Length: 268
Image (cartoon, rainbow, N blue to C red):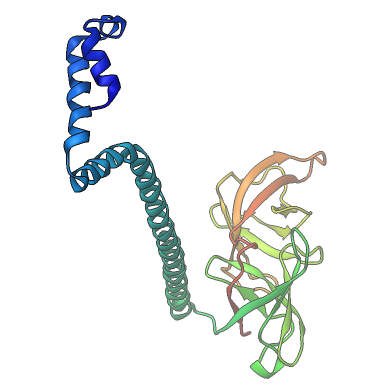
């Protein structure tokens, strides 16, 4: 037994025991004796146990870091899958919208009393409100200058130039475009044209004529260019003009000119 243990036993309740409880002292004494008399293998086992207890907090932290890394990897994989599925869903929705448009186009073509030639817009002027577009049909497809161009919503314009495999279409927004028009409710007639901007004007309507907001405006057929019954737009605003003879009538076009896709050329 080490000398310091005999020294402690000899002194009895010295300053050390005064500061610590008897239980703590005897526990320390027993552990010291055990360490002296236990075999080497047992000591090594005890050392491993003590080391494992000491290392446990560090192992726990390392394990938590590893788990966080695993969670991060799983989240990354899941996010990639969600992104792919979202893109695929968007693609399928666009396909469905395209199929619906084609069904409407085919239905419109079969119900129309006109001889229609399907076409596609392939280019447009680089303007906010373009007045010219190019279509994928030309002289070889039977397209001729002056033919009206429509879609399922209404009148778009007319063919102004024909090439071999493509044509130029003059839209309702073009400053030279004039359309003889008719209010389908009151039968009042006027001339539709653009004065800039996204809206159209119905001109040459006397102040005493009956035109109201919400009235539908169609081609009247009095022009040799556009046949009767093509929808142009709806009356958005009616107000007296500075000129006391004619009203100022603003139309909202039936066609969304920012979304010109499936078109038809009327063969006349």
